[in-house]
Image (tube, rainbow, N blue to C red; front, side, top):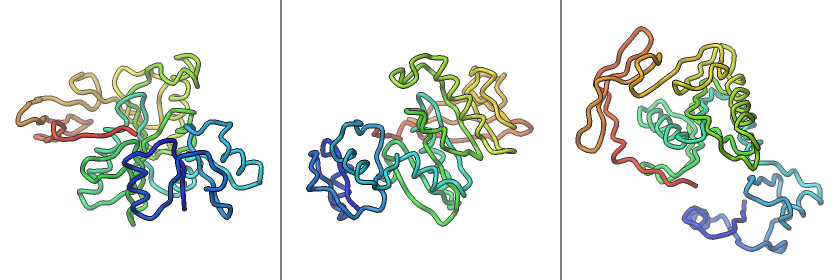
Length: 247
């Protein structure tokens, strides 16, 4: 295994420390010629010398989203999408499942301060995935539980119009497996739906899932969660001490 990046970062330094060679210049002499798979992200330009070499020489060249699709196909998937909020939300979900001992495989878009990584694995075949809308990558996922935090106009270099952004999120929601669950921020359009759809909000009591009795103390929040048919009292959220670094 080896890799390329344009600049050295804390992540590439850690990879090198773990024995994975990383180079930082377009250099055909630095890339392995016996690769079984070549995986790239949309950040790699289409005219990149190394990418063109692998494509022209007949290697199996796939996007990161293709690999994520294959990995998650047979799993129970919790996919968190949204033009903002998805890194924090997916990391909190993955933390809850890991810390509780239930276990999950986590594919995050930022480095979790608790664990110092954006990925971990588990024997439990459950995946928590930050579902990236860039380049429509999230349309390759099959959620059992889908979350949509926001659908603001973003990545217009890809989507061109706000309506195209919203349409992609409609498609993402529609890919929720039969009998699955969609949780969407209150106020998002009605067309973002699945077989079972719940709206959520911090304080809007018309949402099916919302918080009430919110208290702020010691840098965190305590609140009661109101859900359809039940209420969970005195939940503590220490977000004041939670930090993410966006990749």
